[in-house]
Each structure stands twice: as C-alpha cells, then as structure tokens.
Length: 254
Image (cartoon, rainbow, N blue to C red):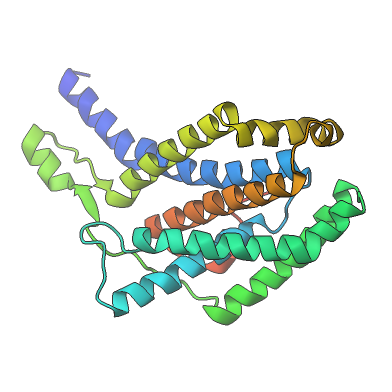
C-alpha cells in the first residue's frame, strides 16, 4: 500500500467512523455529565434524565419556530443555537419546580436513594406525557443554516484524492460546544467556591452543613448545571440527526 492509498484509507475511516463517533460521543458525554452531577451531588439515579433531554430539546424547537416566524435566523449557523439559552432557562426553572414540589419532600425526610429513584420514574412519565402532548411523537427536523463545512467533492478536487471528506457543521459545533462545556465544568468544580461547596456536599452532607454550606443553594446550582448540559446535549443530537421523543429515551441508560 503506497502513501496515496493510505491517505485515502484514513480519509474513508475518518468520514464514516472517526468524525461521526467523535460527534456522537460528545453528545452522549454531555448527557452523561448531567446524569453524573445529579447522581454525585443529589445521590440518586434519575430515571427521568432522558425525558429532561427530550423536554429541553422540545422547548428549543418551540423557541426556534417562534424566532423563525419573526424572521430571526442564525445565518449560516442553526437558529436553534439562538433559542438554546432560552430553552435552558425554561428547562432549569421547570426542573427546580419539580424539585421543590417533589424531590425536596423526600430529601427533607432523609429518604434512601431508592425512594428518590422510584419517584423519578413517576416524573419520567409526567415529562413523557407533556412532550408528546405538546409536540407529538413524530420525527422533527429543526436544522437550518449551512449544512456542510467541508464537501466531499471539493475535498477530493483540492487534494487530488479518490476519497472525499465530509464534515457537517453540526459535527464541528458539537465538538466545540462539548470541549467548552467540559473545560468550563471542570474549572467550575475545581476552582470556584460554589464548585468546591458542591463537592463537599457530595462527599459528606453533614460535614458540609457544619461548614456553613447552604444545601438549598447547592441543590439549585446542581439542577441548573444539569439542565444546561442535558438540554445542550439533546439539541446537538437533534440538530445532527433529528428529534423524536421515543428515540431520546434510549440515549441514556441508568
């Protein structure tokens, strides 16, 4: 195999394996980070996490449609990226509402994690009903803007190869957003006072309370961060593929 054939093979593998795997893996990494924060700080397995992803993506789609109806778009970028911050706020507020009305009752009673896990199953069914009632169970595509950053034909012509490389804008956006989110979260947890408080609360709740850490604030920040991560993951997945509520249920396994 000469160098020319080797380069063609690498391009082919990148086109069909490496780049899609990096993109899909980054989307799942963001979703898993959200799940891990809930489990690490609040100490229960949240069975409703995939439905929070579906809810956040649905909210983004609704805001995207509203912005498009006003003639507001992202140009070569997806309009959903403009709608995403608004969707994160709505999802976080709804998460906090559910926490205050459901989970906080069991936290105050010092219920074991298995009880909170079972409660999250009930929340899961509620979220499923809301999403299917509002937007329906059908497949939704909400991507707009420039679809490809690198076209296969242009790549082949420019480099003189027999195999072309295609990179979608959603794949690049996913990688950039995932890197920024992970670095920001690491910095927040390791360097900021609130991040250290969350880690202390996670390690020993009683000792954290004796140290003057406000547990309610820790819970609030935890839900906000988890909402931001899970909504972002759902939107990136939906832009890259499509939004179908039933599909989202299989993306995260407890």
